[in-house]
Length: 100
Image (cartoon, rainbow, N blue to C red; front, side):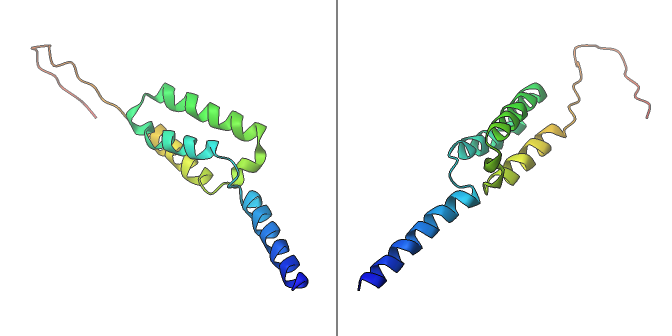
């Protein structure tokens, strides 16, 4: 019975340690992911500032790059960075010719 209890305790320790190795021990990453989901609605400067914030955090805690949300955060940053905005001033009453 003692061996069974000892084996059970050892399994629990291994599972607990494995969770940290996978990178789930960084709750800030969930906050970063939630914030990164809103990046398409903010300015490019805000996306750059967010990217710097995430890079600073991962530099301080390199193991956080192993978190399951890290690739999704990076993908959200990349997709928010690659956008083109065209604005037109419609108050001008003249004709407009655009050459491509």
